[in-house]
Length: 71
Image 1 (cartoon, rainbow, N blue to C red):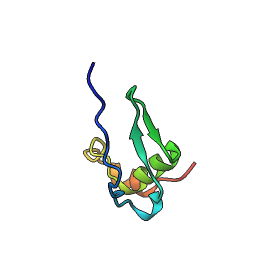
Image 2 (image 1 turned 45 degrees about the vertical axis):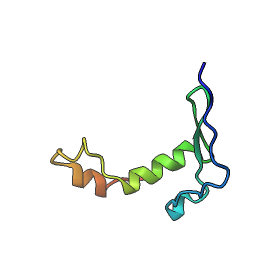
Image 3 (image 1 turned 90 degrees about the vertical axis):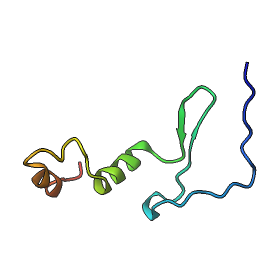
Image 4 (image 1 turned 30 degrees about the vertical axis):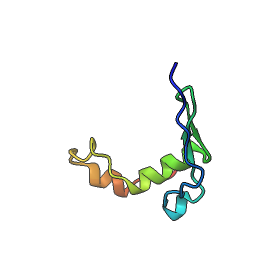
């Protein structure tokens, strides 16, 4: 069985966008992702700020992006 690696105690927090202030993501010993923020809020932020590479090839992508409405 392998030993756990210890994380240094005084590591600085990474910089995040002001809308995601307070975001802390960790992976536990079972490989589960633990987040301090609701996943829906993170997905909304990504939808607004990140272009989808798979959809960029579509002719109507710009129209979809402009007409995006919140549910």
